[in-house]
Structures are given as structure tokens and as C-alpha cells.
Image (cartoon, rainbow, N blue to C red; front, side, top):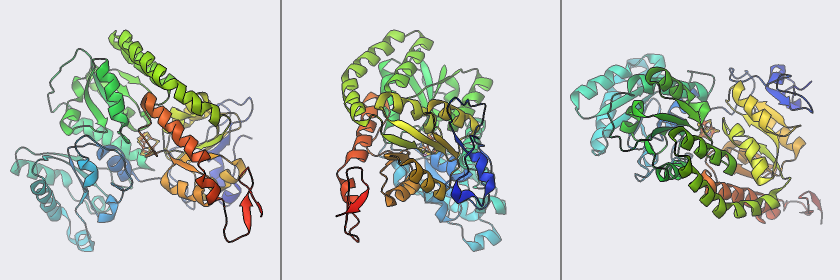
Length: 474
Ligand code: CFM
């Protein structure tokens, strides 16, 4: 049986179909973990909510916008201290966070008045910013505040401002993935086609599903510019509000994170006939193939080849230095969504590590299918894991390092497994050729840093670690 029931989850037998071991000779047809379902009651999920997926993943990387959360102030928690989607306008979207600060009295009497007051106050406080997004939360959705009406009223009263309303309360889906879908569709319905851009090239793209984590977007944009391609908009990292209103004028949608943003690409194809091309900015081979594909689409493949040979020649020796040292190191690849399949194969091929486990918090079965097909035989694949399952997996698999988020990462540290931040990165950007070397360096430092020898010392006992890191008596 390829399904795997964790000992810690024996009391939640429904969990069995959410974990699979990729057995020898088994194909994906034997079993895939269930995915994108409501979290089973009793398991402490690591997922985010649909509001988080809409606002904190996709909405807020937009850089020239006041991002207003209509709800209790706690809903805005996920901001500059956890997010690293920087921008080239001095990080306006990271530096400030806005909320209407709903309280109990607003639940009873309604919060439309304070919403309007807050919108006007925020625009007055930042006179250079005249674009706003407003996000519904569970609290304002449950009492039925009409955010659209208030936004329309303000736009009437303040000519020159433009407001987007995102109706994706926390309960609007099983995970953040539900919110991705909602904001994709809301944006194309409300805003695409309402702004006419200046076209400056024969080759015009939207760069979609790219959130500029630690500068990824800027690295990729530089490659596109060197190819003579105009990036009309980026959905949404380092992207501008008006650029994203003009997505309908691109010749091609270049899609990076298909999990979070395939919806808008598919709609742009249906409504405006713009084709979709899926790419990978991570890893030498996948990135080179991606630049080549874009070049082929526009008939400018020679420009892509010139970049590829220059960059590979410059950075490949450094990557190989790390590969030699990382060979055979065991990795648990435990991101939120699409990074499991963006990375599973190319970290093995290009950094030499063995992927002994993949998981996704909110990926769909298609993401798992891609992830499992790209990881090593014997790997443990888990959908929507809980903390205890993560611990049990680490104890069983004894990974040398795990790539995951801050919360599971801190748990790993407690059992002295080093972790890299797969979401926000350690020393990014990790996209591009130089970025991929930087990732390899972070992995190397994660595993080999002498700090781990110290962290393995338990000063309460008279013990020292042996050369494998296990504790022995002094
Ligand atoms: Fe796409 Fe993302 Fe991801 Fe995602 Fe995310 Fe993210 Fe992620 Mo954190 S959009 S699915 S909801 S690549 S925030 S930039 S790192 S879990 S694997």
C-alpha cells in the first residue's frame, strides 16, 4: 500500500489518504494524496485562509497602492515582518499597512461608515498614492458591509482615485488557494481593460504569478529587457496598479506560479486571445529552457541564447562547487504550493541533493502529481500536513536540511534540523543564474555552518555531538 498513515495521526484515520510513499516501480496511477479539500477537523493544519491568499500573497505585492483590510486589525498581521516582496519604489507596500480596525460595536451597528472614513483618511495621508485595494475579511463579510458601494461613492467624490474591491473573506475556501482564485477573477472582471498602456516594443508580455520575493522579479525582468521584450505588467510582484489594468494588451502571458495565477492567464486567453506560456525561473536548465521558449515564441531565440551562454559560463563553475559538496544530502522539500514541483527535480540534478519528502500545504492534486513525479523513489509526499506529522517524518527520514516556512522551520530547529526559508528565502533572490548559486550557498551554509555544532550541544547534559551530529557522552 503506498498510502502512509502517521502514528501520530492514527486517531484521525482520514489522514491516511493525504500521504503517499513513492514506492519502487509504482506509478502515479497507484495513488496520489488527496488534495485541496477542507482540512479534517482535529488536525492542526498549517494552512492560511482565503483572505490571506488573496491579500497577503497576491494583492499586497502591488507596489503603488494603499492596501486596506476591512476588518479587525489582527487580520493584517502578515506584513513587513513576514513578507519579503520588495519593490523599486522604496517598498511602500511593505512599509505601511492599513486596516479599518473593526470592533464589537461595528459588528452590531455596521462598519461602512468607518470604512469610508478610513479610505479618505488614508488617501489624505499619502497624497502621492491614488490607487487602493480593499479586502473583505470574515468579520465584514458576515455582517454584510457593502464595500463595493462605499468604494463607488468615494471614487465619485474623489476624482482621480481608483479602488479595487476583493471579496475573499477567510472562510471563502479551504485554504489560501481559494483566495488566489478569487482575486484572479475579481481583478480581470473589475480592472483589466480599463487602462491603455504605451506599447514600446514588438514583443510585449505580462509576467504572471511572480511576487518579487527578495527581488526575483527584477532579476527576471532584466533578462526580458535584454531580449528587447516589454514587460507590460507583473502580476503582481513589483507591479503597478495601472500596469495590471492594461494586461489585455500583451501578446503573451508568461506564467511562473501556475498554482496561484493560472486562473487569470486562462481568462486572458478566453477573453482576449492571449496565449499562456508556463516557465520556471529557478534552476539553470529550467530557466534556460524558459528563456529559449519565450525567444522561440517571438522569433528572437538568438537573444535568449546569448544570455544563456553568458550567464551559464559565468555561474556554472560556482554552482558545481556547491553540487560537489551537497551530493547525497537529504532534503525535505516542504513549501506551501508550487515550489515543490518547481524545485524537486532541479535541486537534485543541479545541487546533487536527494529529495526524501515533498509536501504542500494547499496545492491541488495536479501540484502533487508534478511534485511526486519529479522527486526520488521512496520519497514521502504529504498533503496539508500537521506539526506532529512533520516531526514524525523528520525523525524517520533524518534529513540533513528542510526547506519550509518559518513556523515549521522553528519546530525543526528544536529537534536540531537546519531549515531554509523556502517562502521568503535566506539570502535571495534565488531566481536567475546568480540567484540559483545563492540558493546553493544558503543550502551549503545551512548544512555545514559550524553554528550547528554548537546548537547540537546540550549544555544541561554532559554530552558532545559525534561526527554525525548524534549526542554522545563526553
Ligand atoms: Fe505560488 Fe508563491 Fe508558492 Fe503561492 Fe505561498 Fe509564496 Fe509558497 Mo509562501 S504564490 S504557490 S501562496 S510560489 S507565499 S510566492 S512561498 S506558500 S510555494
